[in-house]
Every structure is written in C-alpha cells, then in structure tokens.
Amino acid sequence: MTDTFTPGERDLLLIVDVQNDFCPGGALAVPRGDEVGPVINALAGKFAHVVLTQDWHPRGHSSFASSHPGSKPFETIEVAYGQQVMWPDHCVQGTRGAAFRDDLHADRAEIVLRKGYHREIDSYSAFYENDRKTRTGLAGYLRERGLTRVFLAGLAFDFCVRYSAEDAHREGFEAVVIEDACRAIDLNGSAEDTRVLFKKLGIRCVSANAIGA
Image (cartoon, rainbow, N blue to C red; front, top):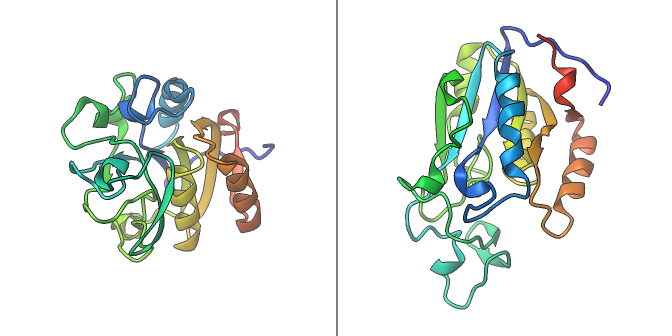
C-alpha cells in the first residue's frame, strides 16, 4: 500500500452498499461495518465524481434463505446461473435496513445505482448481476462521462466490493480498492481469497492515506 494518487476529472469514487443492514445491528451485519462511514466521507471530498450503490431487494428475493424451504443462511445452493450464497433477508426495498447509514454523506453522489431488484437474480457487482450477463448500465455511464479510473470503498470487501472491482477491470477501467475504507464478511476465507484475486488481476489495494487532496 505504497502508491499515492491525486484524484482528477477522470476518476470516480464508487461507494458500495453502506447501508444499515450491512452494519452492526443490521440483518446481514459486516463486522465493524459501521467504521467505514467517516473514512469514506473524508475520501468523498477529494473526488469530483462519486457514485453510490444500494442493495435493493424485493421481499422474497431468491438470494434469501427464507425463500428456499430447508435452506439456512450462509450455505450455498445451485441456482439457474450457478452457485449462490443464501443470505438472511436484508436490504428489503423501502425498509430502514435498506437505507444508507445516517452518518454517510450521501449528498456527494451524482447518481445512486440500485441493484438486486430483480427477484430471481442476486447482484453483488455494481456492473453486472450474478448471472454475469445482465448489465446494470454503470459501465456505459462511466464511458459517456469520460471516466477511466474507479476507486472503490464500502461493504463488503470480499463480496460486493470484490465483484465490482473485478468487473470494473473486466470493462477496461483501472480499479483501485481503498481497503481501509472497506470491511469484510470473511466467509470461509473469502477476504484472503479476494486479496489473491486482486493481485492476480493487477487490481491495487491502497490505504485512504494514499489518496491526496
């Protein structure tokens, strides 16, 4: 984590899923997820362009263990598009759990991208749903705006941040993950697996201190 960056007009801060249900006390709490807000707020002031993602599930979403009789949260099942982790019901549309944390300065965002609203497909990535075919439209938005580098922060490091960074890279954008502005679920070693993947793809992980004014 020795690289330093000064954000410019072609850079975007992508803030991933900093919502109540992903923080302590929420339905799918990421350990210490409540700690990212102040770090992200400080970062957001350094970027001209900010996008927020928001997990936005209908009731009875197919990724909920409660939608599959006999399934338990955090086990993996086979679905039409491959393997899918079963989650507790979370980020249900219109609920307090789906709202952004009160301490997140969400007014810095140029757009809010909602994902996971198709009942039959989960969506970790800000770019693609979990079938790896259905696009969210974010890549097209970034290209039309002339943005070329994506800095990522938020929840969770090893799921929605991971897939968003991987797909940013896949779409031809430079992806940089600000790791201390993220927190991980770390399901069966998924945090270390994410670091290994990022290294393989050439996706850099940096600290918030590496982002200049």
